[in-house]
Amino acid sequence: MYKLHKLIFTLLALSLFLLTGCGVKSSELSAGTAPEADKPVQEEPSSEEEADPIYITFEGTDLEGNTVSQDIFTQSKLTMVNVWATYCNPCLQEMPGLGELASEYEKSEFQIIGIVSDVSEGEDQTLVESLVQETGAAYPHLLANASISQAILTSVSGVPTTFFFDGDGMYLGGVVGSAEKSTWEELIHELLEEQ
Image (cartoon, rainbow, N blue to C red):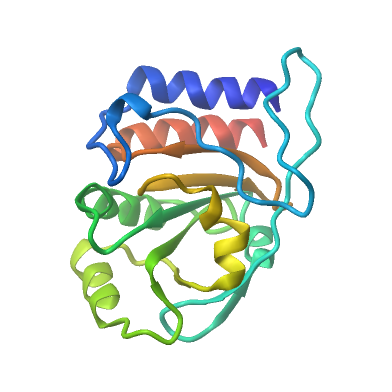
């Protein structure tokens, strides 16, 4: 796990072409913190010793009204959870590339899940649907709710924030800030090799 965190941090520190996220200064870019889990989040290990794995539990609704839970992670070897907001230009600028990535991989290998941090279940989702269509981000997008807030959004200091999970739902790492498609592609390739 330590090597994976180091890989994510190093790769992104060297190659991210940031469009700076909303609510985060570019100088604050670093590997993201782990989403909330059933147990306290542990710091990155100081030695080669592995930290306890982190898993999250949540239930939400996508734009079509389907219920989605952490079980969605079992559908792919690697899942990218991209937290975005309707007011965030860097989020919207990276979404066309994310849409392309989502369509270029077999779902059993890799999938993307979007989480709209500023629109909650039960609110008007017309703007969200329009932005998803305009950006070509044709992958599932979940609306915020108490379960998603507790499991994921409390760990978000700015948008976009991206988390990675393996096919068992184990947290692999996170990134605050946006990136070009090619940078995400390189990171996804490295993470899939680790699986």
